[in-house]
Image (cartoon, rainbow, N blue to C red; front, side, top):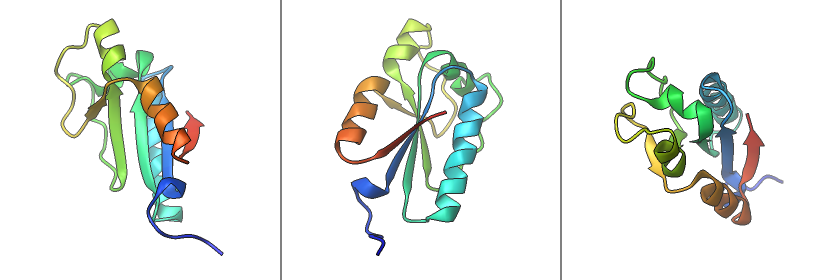
Length: 112
């Protein structure tokens, strides 16, 4: 029996950190997850060097229905990124805190 209600069991966090190309891999994985189970809510949380993929001067990250892309503000400060994120990119105060909170609430976690 599958629980199809929206809630923690349907939340997935994909973590892109090491390489800017990881963001594209994560959004593609998110799209595949949504196709497999439209009840999922997918967040791509980005920190570290992968943040370079989200700046406004980078090629635009293709939006995916049902997938939210979030940039870590701590990482942005450390990398000197003050503003200039691409349209549609959200921010979280801390990638680590956001990931742990999501996991404690029952979300699945995948490092890309």
